[in-house]
Image (cartoon, rainbow, N blue to C red):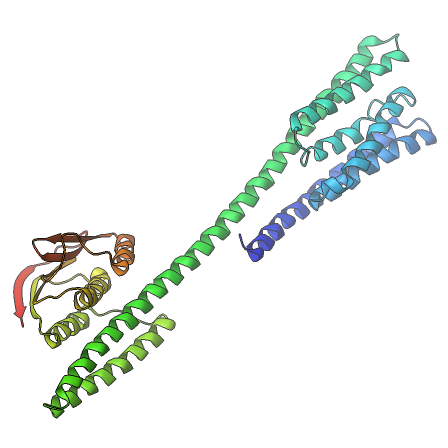
Amino acid sequence: MTARSLRITEATQGRLRRLNLMTTLPPLLIAAAFVVAVDSHAWWHAVILAPGVLAALVIFERWTADDVMRVALPCTIVAGAVWPVGALVTASPNAYWGICTVGSLALTRPPRHRGLVAAALFGYVAAVGAARLLVDRDDVPKVLITYILIPTVVTVVVTVLTLLGERFYDIVRELEQSRKREAELAVIRERVRFANDLHDIQGHTLHVVKLKLALAQRLVSGDTDRAKRELHETYALVSDTITQTRELAYAQRRLNLSAELENAKNLFEAAGIRVRVTREAEVETRVSELLGLVLRETTTNILRHAQATQVRITLSASGIAIVNDGVPGDAPPEMKGLAALRQRVADGGGDLVVEQEKGEFTTSASFARSVTTSSYPREEAR
């Protein structure tokens, strides 16, 4: 996760904690005032109980700021001291409230063994309550209920609820981080798509420019007019590439299958390769751009990697197949452009297949048909 995403996540969590502070602090203050008012039978009783209440309020405020551990130890010491003094000296059965609150919040950021720390907290509350029997032996049932059972059960319940609340914040943090990661992945995917489109434009154009300049160089001494025409077409091609690059940068570029088909035929003709185009049906608009990408990448690969003498292009309503000869070796060559294109076709709901058999290389892309399109086989040959 980037530093910016981390800051946004922490800001979201901070808003939730502040909301919790505003909604929970008022009842917490009421409970604190109730503890002091009920258990104080003299002014000095309030002085003894007040530090435990103050420690509980301080650690709660720090918890909302995600800064529990800085105050956990001093607050635990203060609240832990108030409970035995209240139980043994001032006969305050609610004096455990401070250690109950402090301990449950401190457990949200414990060292390692949270279970052992929780057990120590519950045991401490129960043991101090049991110590009340040393000064009040005449009413054992009251001591068992008021000083042992109720404080221990309440501490357990508060601790469990606090840990569940902390888990809620953990889930919020994880969801926020997942959302940010998805956004970052979307940006990365868009950058890869842009890089692939730029590669398609620049790589294709540069290779065609190389072919046309080589042809013009051969014709410059024997056929000046043809050489001038090739140079003029090269200039127009470079200008068109600049336009396409600008459109790509501003997300305005849309690939035209008919233009790509005409461009491929012209390129193959310039390289001395015979071309036959068969249209089995009208191509669906929704897949036209992806099929144009397949045709462009395949055309570049044929001109760059094969010694082809003929190419057959077959168009269907939702697919294209390009077959060329002049392929050396028995295994299809590794071409990174086709690997990237296969992923783009798959993202569009299609399938790109590359096969080599008997000296012929076949590149085909197909998509699921969405509508029924009338077939009208038609061939164009060059």
